[in-house]
Structure formats: C-alpha cells, structure tokens
Length: 205
Image 1: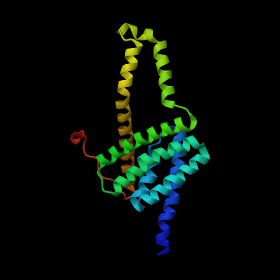
Image 2: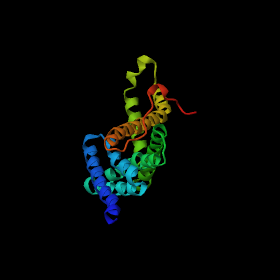
Image 3: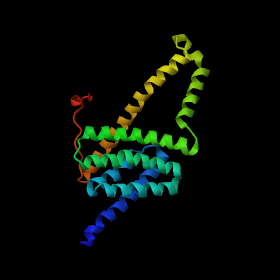
Image 4: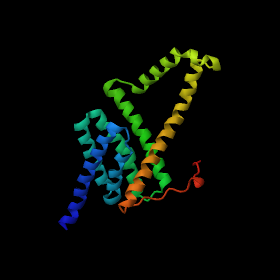
C-alpha cells in the first residue's frame, strides 16, 4: 500500500521536472506546446491535485532558472492549456469542448496577466505595442496612399480585427496543444477523445 500511495508523488515529481525542462527548451526555441503535456498526463492519471502540483513545481523551477517573468508566463500557459484541459478531460468532455475551454482559459489568463503587469509594474505592454504600431503606420503613410487608405482607416480596421485575431490565435494554439498531446499520450496508453473529421466541424451558435 505505501508504494501505491507514493506512486502519484514520484510520477508527479518526474512530470514536474519534465515540464520544467520543456519550459526551458521552449524559452530558447519559442515552441511551447509540449509544455502542457506533463500536466495533462498528471491530470489524466492522478487527478487535478497532482496536475496542480506539477504546474506549481515546474513554474517554480522556471522562476529560479529563467526569472519571474518567464516563470509566470509558463505558469499561465500551464494553467490555461494543462490544468484546464486536464479538468475537462477528467469530466469526460469531448475534444471540441476541451479545446474551446482551453482557448477561453488562455484568453482569460492573458488578460489577467496584462492587468497584473499594469497594476504591479505600471507597464501596459499592450498599449505600448499599439502605440509603436501606430507610429510605424503613420511614419510609412506614403506606402498606403496609392491604395487610397489613410493611416487612420488602417488603424481602425486593425483595431476592429484584433479581437477576432486573438480568438483565432487562442483556438489554434489550444487545438495544436491538444493534437500534440493526443499523439504523445496515445503512445503512453492515455489516449484522449478523438478529434472529429474536419468535414464534421460546426461553429457553435
């Protein structure tokens, strides 16, 4: 019995170390999708508590190795794509519902992170990026003149499309994480609900 009780702890420690190593690799490569797989695997095998411990330990290691910003960014990614996805899988949700929930969680975590940065460091990264983009558009206004487009019109169009672009990015990322996790976890005997063929995809009301 003691060995059975210790197994989730040992597996959780190994998965946390693996998630931290994947986070370290993603910091230098820019490819972070595999980072969520250890958390999803922990949730699938041992439940939400084990997945939460894997998330906290892995994020703590990344804070020590890469600094607070990188560690907190990894924590947000793991919460959105690992913990949330694992919770949905434990409740028996299908692939589409799981991906949708992961996408919503990522948008929520991103918004919370931006709000926290503004509150703690008085730094609005989104606003700074937008002002930089607007300055570039204004500076190169001559490039759009032949098409009859003014900088104000272009900025207005981009501002209108930004929410759509954010949603598409979040859904695409969640789908990529899910498909990658399904391929890896299927080989480990922890298969995820299958993704239906593309011809059967339907937008929710």
